Length: 173
Image (tube, rainbow, N blue to C red; front, side, top):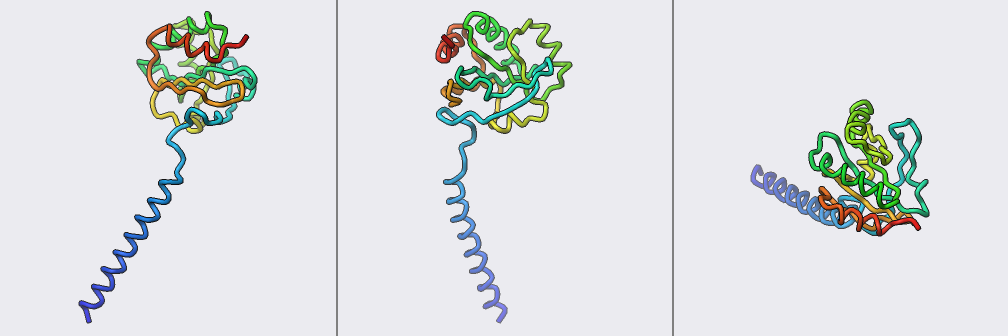
């Protein structure tokens, strides 16, 4: 009798494992992508800038905007931000630099040190980062006038020409 009970338990465990595998396969097929990607509508957000003004993505509808996720502890971000600043001054394109997870005092010191002129949006609670499913930084996104992500560049932009080419894709006339 003991052998029969053990075999029944083994078969039941096998059935549970097989059902779990089938469930996982179907679940994986329906899972969302790991990030907001090219062709997706940009997730809406609203947050404060360093000056205490409310910034909403929907305010840029009809214009297009370059969004850059960064942090002061991220060396590639530190290298990239001065180039983005110069391109911002040259290109005439709306840009939002979203600081991920830092306190406004530290961010303000960083902005003053590098004389950054573009708007800095604070994501202290990481909600924007989560909405865009940002894994690594820097991350630069181009959002067109309809609110669609048209480019997603993960990693440091090292050449001014590359940055200007990105900006020209959404340049306001």
